[in-house]
Image (cartoon, rainbow, N blue to C red; front, side, top):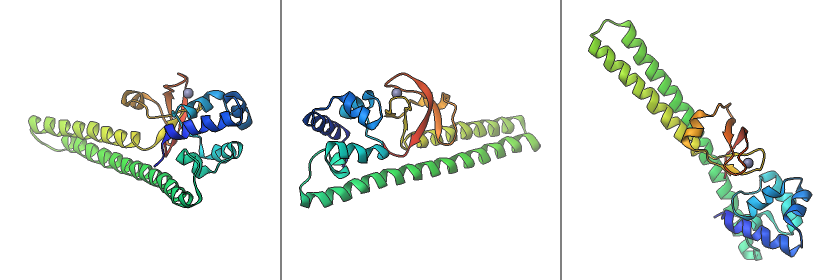
Length: 202
Ligand SMILES: [Zn+2]
């Protein structure tokens, strides 16, 4: 299993062994020293694209980075496979939730619009009309709530300023304008706002 805190401590330990400051390591990777600090305190994992250059600088393998320790040859293969499977599993899980969210939204819209139309078009008592409208409204709100919960639990958002990955609060989530892959949020770490990209993993 991946352990962000363990990986962070391992990065810090290796960096000190190489007698580098956080700033020096950050400069070599063209990132901010805040990002390095984030990794080392277990508040974020290096992006996939940074893993290989980081490992080269620290003199370890990606598998050792993900495991947070140096690995002996026999442990190595097992850990490598576990780490890859963890990443794949989390990505698959996130994709599955996003697909489920899309289906939930479509069903919600169809069901509530149908209820609203039926209550508006056909002859019926006022009581029945009100009941249909209420059910339509409940379906709409419930469906949006379920869809938002699903999407929120699928992966994280990455701050484009400091690289922190985080799960937004439900309020921030609902309030934030968004596109398919980005959402306008405030970073809990550096406090800056912007359109942050969805990531399928933590
Ligand atoms: Zn930030």
